[in-house]
Image (cartoon, rainbow, N blue to C red; front, top):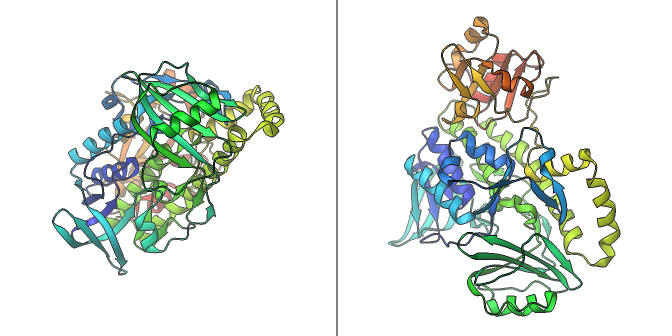
Length: 489
């Protein structure tokens, strides 16, 4: 075989997945149709959950000084994300181009084989391998791998070639997205509605202004290329009355509100992640963030299967865990689209929801939904409140060290936190120390409120989610270790 895994697409999902696989020592080839990064940045900033993901892999410093904010919205209605106690704040104004550059550098440093200018034209799942026909600078050739993951976007060639079902609804409108120099417009960070549509204005570094325009009543068009800036200028004038013709466009794009999700995230040896698996209105900047989290959920599982440490059935948990997340993503983005992009007939509902958002419990629910902090996986049941949830970032103190919980996850391995200095617990986990780090430590006084009182041990998966905790898990420790990390050596 040419590689254990072939990843198609060098966007955020594909690059994150390549890095995760390389952390586990898995050979990976990344095939990207484009010869170089476009520089376009449809995604902008990170949600709180993605901030946690980058933190646990030690990637946050690579972004430099990250501006954060607790200001958010749901369908254009302001929501205070500060009600999410103990969570990272969301990062603002980091263009997707920078995110891709950081993830590419990380994945390549770890040894990923990134091949730009290589287009997948066909694939065949042979049952024990996947064959991929590729068109590259030197002509057409074939590659073989144990698994293939499509991270090649909403028009995914992998999804179509492998025969995934992709039900949903077609686009009903067209919106414009543009980065422009030379404009002096008042910021409209969460958007402003007009009788004729909606606009958003966001200042970016370097004197660039991000524009989003939705002109109500404009049907989607079949385009073979990017729209012209003149179209944006004309639509902006009709909606707002403002003249932006003097601006210098850096790039212009269009998108719609099509909403689709594959019925299965895996078919045999072919898997999908990111926009290949789900497309939706980009409300609240959730698309790139969900795609990155798809990759983090899949990476360690696929690596464990490829390296023979876990049975292939572990891959079933990727669909089981991430498909419901994608389904809720589609639900909330459709709801936001109705609130934000509809006409005056929606105003009574906006008014009611604005009143409800005034209650902390409602703000907390909506903020957690949009930021990904509400996610809880089925890891086997039990009464412990951390089961299936992200492990809080504790400050931990050991016999001769102090560390943070996220720092323990930088190597992409599982972590068993022995919080009660329990020698018997450590002996029971000894058979998994080739893939799980055992750390004996106690929460620092500043972190004691972040973990339930009486918690004596926590098993954390490589993606940062709690797989087992004591007391309170239905399964015992060896059973949970075997479920998530394979048989003891």
